[in-house]
Length: 118
Image (cartoon, rainbow, N blue to C red):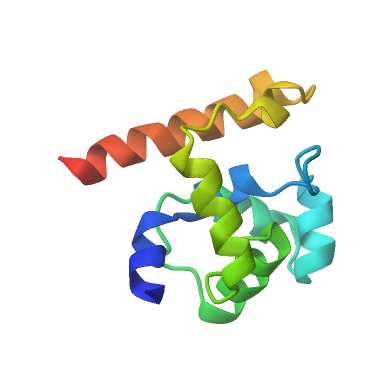
């Protein structure tokens, strides 16, 4: 199950799913604070389309901070339910950072899905 989730949920998608419960997206600073990782490391992981090159302790801290912990059933049920409903990322679109930050990440994630499926 863990390895399947590792392939199915790349870092960029986990970053896109990081938000307050039923609310606004988490900022890089909030994820850094929750994870204990430097903001630059959070940004580097967030932009990745695979987990290659991400050390396990960093992966664990990032996933937990984003609320997408692969070993936490409640987190994963929420994520899987949301993705099953063909996500529209409305909470991201409401953010003032949509066009400059989140939209490019969504595109990166969508393009990486296409590349992996071919």
